[in-house]
Image 1 (spheres, rainbow, N blue to C red):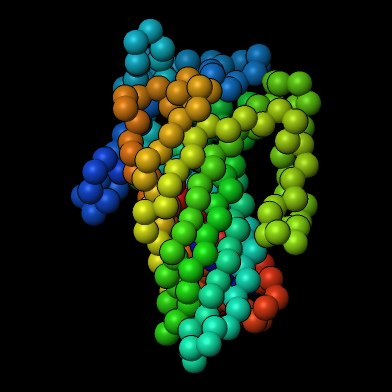
Image 2 (image 1 turned 60 degrees about the vertical axis):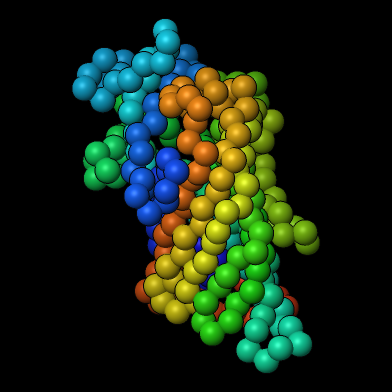
Length: 252
């Protein structure tokens, strides 16, 4: 998640119950109508009324177990007083593109999930830690998941146009964006060598009011999320004290 490369890779997000090693594909129920605009939802209605449908109280949605997307990242690596040990700071901007089900094996298209058709999801992940012996080890990290609703006032898609001096993504079209959830850092590590595999987990996942309307089950919502992925097999290059940009794919 925090590397530089030539061509894209992958990132994903999955829900965890209690033990990250044993519950990488826990189901959750999504109510896209909490974010959708006014255009046709026929395929969505078919999805939630079929075998993949789910309900929470009087609200209907669809069952998913993974969210997939692509990311861009700004990484700054600085030397320490210890030979071979470096500090890093990283900010990742993630565009979530598609939901999956059946243990992450079956995709749910945009016309059914409405993700990418009537709203977008993006996340901002910030992390810091050390780089030593070809391995990244995070000591802090934070996660924010945002919704960009096409039907709200402003209506423009959120786009990252660059990075500022504080390692924050410079975004346009955020007038209609709403925070859905946040997560506290639990653990995170990654490899500097290609393909740059990494995994970050977050705990104490907190839903906003809108997040509660969107992620309608389970209750309480999963208290851990796992984000993992890699960069492409060409690897990446880092210049000390200068921000390096990276792209890839992300799973949640």
